[in-house]
Amino acid sequence: MDSLLVVRLWAAAAWADGKMHPNEAAALRRLISASEDLDGERAAQALQLLESADVNPAEVKALPRDAREGVYRAALGIVKLDGQVTDDERAFLARLRAAIDLDEATLARIEAEAR
Image (tube, rainbow, N blue to C red; front, side):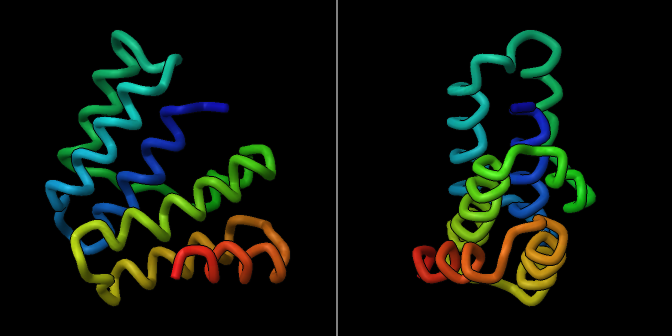
């Protein structure tokens, strides 16, 4: 799995409301540190995403099913880290949900777990 893509998706979810909350930034830094394939230049690219990030949610389709589930689960969680979910974040999650290519039962289960 491409950890840089996962970080980009997480960062895009965090930036969906136009700002990066310190809790969101801390979660992204932990993800970057824990990702074995992010070192050197790739780690630097990942850290740049703390400053600004945008991604087409359709890119997630390239990931294996379990990774797509994990990305959606993480996106649902990361938008809550600042204590509020904005309309812009809801819109990002809706675009991700539409693009993620998972069946309704799986999406409903992930959303129920996130509540």
